[in-house]
Length: 95
Image (cartoon, rainbow, N blue to C red):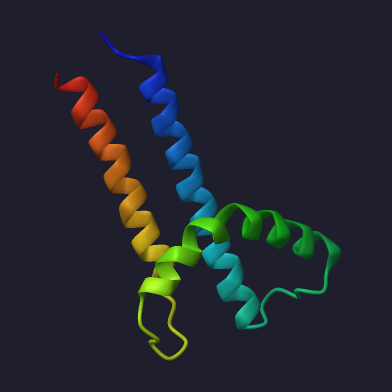
């Protein structure tokens, strides 16, 4: 029997993964000056995404060595979240 709480938790992990992807794309576009970061809408979106993503990215960034401006922490976070989601399904549905 399927557990709706496990499905809800997996969907929340998926939504957080999407937030990390959107944050990464927006940071990249702002750094290449494609998006004007002084626009109020962009500032509000980035503030919300920073508040969501930075607490999870900060510990990973502390562990990684300095790569000269290349930030691999979103990739590592996405891999960890994908692993957690897969482990959630594997553990609770294969019992």
